Amino acid sequence: MGLTEDDKNHVRAIWAHVSKNPEVFGAEALYRLFVAHHTTKTYFSHFDLHENSPQIKAHGKKVVDALTQAVNNLDDIAGALSKLSDLHAEKLRVDPVNFPLLAHCILVTIACHNHGPLNAGVLLSMDKFLACVSRVLVARYR
Image 1 (cartoon, rainbow, N blue to C red):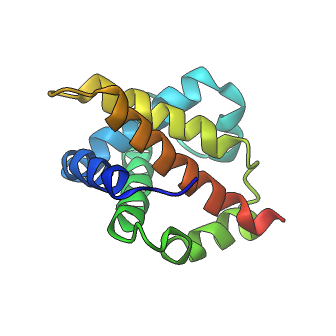
Image 2 (cartoon, rainbow, N blue to C red; image 1 turned 90 degrees about the vertical axis):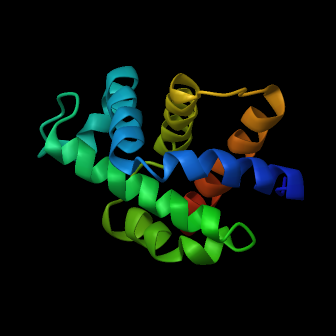
C-alpha cells in the first residue's frame, strides 16, 4: 500500500511539528516502547532506561532524525533508510517484530502531543507511513 499525495501531505504536516522537538518525541516514544514491550529493552541493556535519561533522549533524537530523512524522501523511503536497514539487520540484529511496536508507540506519542485535529485520515496516513518505514527496515532480513 503506497502513500497517496494526501497521505504525504498529512505526514509532512504532522512531522513538521515532530521534527522541531526530536528529543521530546523520540524519548517519549522509546520510553513507551520499553514500558509496554519489555523484551525491547534487550537491545539497550547498556542504557539508563529511566524516563528522560540522557541516553534515551539521544537515541530518541536519532530515531526522529532518521524518520525525518524518510519524510523528506517520501518517494524513496527505501533509499533514504538503506544504511539504517543494513545496520539493524546485519550488525544490530534487531528482531523485526520490534519495528511495528515502535511505530505504534510513535503514533501514540504524536496523538498525546497533538494540539489540533488528529482526524482519522491523518492518523491513517501516519500509520501507512510508519508501516512503510517498518517494511523498509525489515527488507534486509529476507
